[in-house]
Image 1 (cartoon, rainbow, N blue to C red):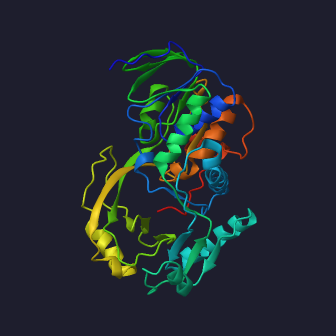
Image 2 (image 1 turned 30 degrees about the vertical axis):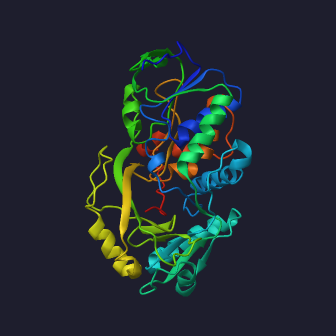
Image 3 (image 1 turned 60 degrees about the vertical axis):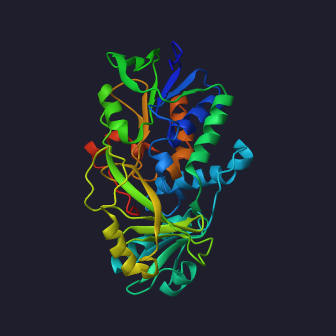
Length: 385
């Protein structure tokens, strides 16, 4: 089927995941005319649609906390604002901690979170087990608990933003790959796609794991590395309690949450190499089994019903890239959130709108500019798995 593209646009957004559709909505709702979003696949078909859906506020960097809190506000009111149910489950997030240094780090981060008004707190191993009964407390020193965090359905959030963006006049075009960006010196003149060319002087890169290549088209370094992560879901578990917190064993990075009448399980494959392969693999399952045996032995023999894989878009400091390029006029970018793009995307779209309009965003995002790696401004996010 041939596509009919507009001949020109005020803004072209590359990428139809959560950040792209959120940006398209916020721009169109603010009255920006002729917003066009392009994606090589279906909307939400990249990292967003393969995410575990977690949303949390337990971060070590204030900017990440600000973005997460703002996104949570948007998601809590999403059904009312966008007429789209997203199955938000505010069951909490529980980080299990087994080293004194990690406990000290989380205690310091909790003080920052509390100063910003969050009710997050440390709990004892015994209370952690009460909250998440599948765990054993051997070797645990404490746990960090955020009672209002949780998870929701990524595809539904994408649909809500996309529908609202179109209602405000944005044109969202899936299954249309961008093949290049044309420039006249340092000024953007057009975006090339497999279906034709769109004249524009503004491009917003929200291409997730593919953002490095998009930046290369205009001479902007976006240091994003694609890294495959897999998840599996279990068969129904007799007596599986609903409302379990999203539980993460910080020492191993193994996690689980409710999924239907069973559980969703994830674990980072330590042998995974960077690349764009998203095909599921069972190579990491033996390591998952060892992590389960250590921290949740009752789950070792649970049957696996299925699973999938997707791409993390990892930066050197595990923080996102948000800003406007100095090298090329009106090239904006929002990518590289290292597994946290879904939970921050609702707010990031609002920030990118303000950067485009030259309005001060609700939080200062200069610390996320891509050029930080050439200076001493790098401050790694420590609460990552």
